[in-house]
Structures are given as structure tokens and as C-alpha cells.
Image 1 (cartoon, rainbow, N blue to C red):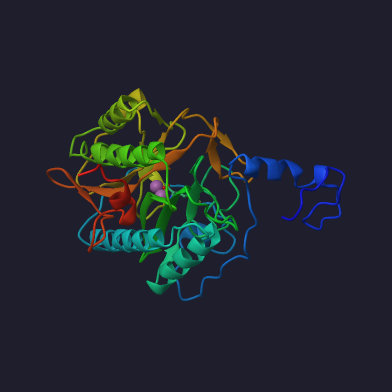
Image 2 (cartoon, rainbow, N blue to C red):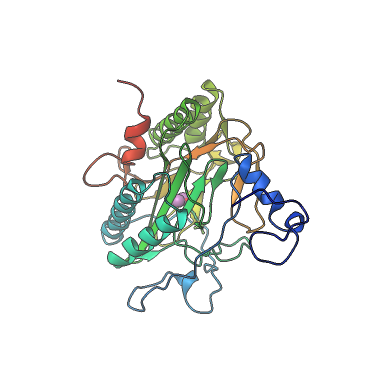
Length: 341
Ligand code: MF3
Ligand code: CO
Ligand code: CO
């Protein structure tokens, strides 16, 4: 950025405004280690032969059609398609995680995930998704959440720094079904507290999934996750939840990651598919929202991590659908932060 600007100098960005009225505050935040919004690249195109989910059809405004309020139960016809979408998501996540290193921008990760979805004949589910809650359509094809960003970070020109952690959340819509998975990766040398946070978050995800069985309840997942996070002095983020996933991106049931009494009513049945995706924070689990309407950050700006799988309730337990056919679940993210052996 050159020599240090005085507050009344013209800003370095060429806006013509005084530095103090333009980038001064943002520069100070960056210097203090905070993640700040960057610049978005132009919209990425999707060829017309790729089938779009209903919310991404022209005129839909990113809003999915109203659902019937019921959890989807798969049959012999839908389950292979659901499996294929989840496999694709898992493979793309592992490959995207390989890109994480200092010097790579989150926009480069977005470009990769976008193309990887198209190469498989799928649509990158986040692109143009507004959900039901009044958010603007998500402008990119994957969520990249760096350091204090809890979830739904929008890929931009920010370059990963040595010591950053970055969650990559891949969802692909393939042959009518969404597969949804994420993992937190390390860029360069990451401090031990962050690596412990990442490992414990992965364990929380696994312990939560281990509770799933026919007749089981969402509250069992939440209890397992909360207990493990608390044992390490970490917080569970309560504002964001797991969800049914299949023909719809977000559907019942709501999967709380803490013991929420409202989660008692619903019982799992074979054939249901949903996500378990706890966000665990070093400090407070409370969040603040960036003006973009998507990016959620921890209120204390300390780091958060997340892992996500799409799971299937089987006749006698649970099957994780977003494990890649080759290699371990979550690829590099898991290898880098496994407990010392
Ligand atoms: N993949 C996220 C989830 O786990 C949802 C992202 S919505 C988006 O539910 F619009 F931000 F992509
Ligand atoms: Co999800
Ligand atoms: Co996701």
C-alpha cells in the first residue's frame, strides 16, 4: 500500500475521497487481524444444459417454493440420486480443500468449486439462493468462512494469510437432489488453539452423528455436541442449525446443535436425510451480521470452526453420505488436525 497515508490525503483506492472518509478504518481493522469484506468478482455463468433448482429459475428471486413442512423420506428411486449428489459434494470438498494455502483468494476457491459442480453436470446450490428469510440471493457458488467468520462467508478477493483457518461449505444440486458438506482447513502454520478448535469441532460433528438412529431425537445430537464442546471450554453457536436436505436445500427437521427442548417432538425414521453441521467458537457463540446479509461473525471476533455431513437414517442406525469414495472424510482438514498418534 506504499507509505502510510495521512487522514486528509486522497485515499489509495482512487475514489477521490479523503483517506479518513474512505479506507482508513478498514485498513486499521485489517492491520489488527480482522477479516473485512473484499471485492466480488463478476457473476459466474451456468450453461443452460445444467438443471437449476427451483429457486434459481428465472424470476424465482432465489426463493424456494413453500414446502409441505414434512421431512422427506427416500425410496429406492430417490436414494441413489441422493447418494450421488452427496458423493459429488464430498469429492469437490476434498479437492477444494487442497487449494487452501497462503496466497490463494477465496474467489479462486469459488471459481474451482463452481467449475467442479458444472463438470459433474450439477448446479452449485448456493448460487442465487435467498432462502425463505428475506436474505438477498447468495452471489457465489460456495461459502468460504475465514477465522472469525462463523458461516456463509462470501468468496471475494481476500487472500488467505499464513495462519488463517477457512471453512469451505460445498452444496451441489445434482439430478434433482442436494448434497451438503463442509470442513475447516488450515492455511500454512496455524496456532495450536485453532487446531484444537478444529479437531474438537470435527469430533463434535462425529459424536452428534453417532446419536442418529430410527426413533432417535434431534436433542440427542445436540446434547452430544454441547457436552464435547463444553468439555473443552468452547461455545456452540446457536443461531445456525442443521437441516433436512434432499429435493430441497433446507427442509425439516431443524437440527439444533445444543439440547433444545423444542427438538424433542421429532423422531428419526429410516430414509430421512439431514445435515449435522455444528459451528463451535473459541469464545462467545453469539454472532453479528455483516451488511451483506449473509456473513456471520463471532461477536468477540475470536475464531469459529465448522464441519458438516449429510447423513441417512438407516434401518438400524446411520450412514454418512458425504464421505468420499476414496480417502478419508474431509480430506486434508481431518488429517491436519487429528489428535497426535
Ligand atoms: N451450505 C449451507 C448449509 O450448510 C447453506 C449455505 S446457503 C448459501 O446449510 F446461500 F449461503 F449458500
Ligand atoms: Co447445511
Ligand atoms: Co453446507
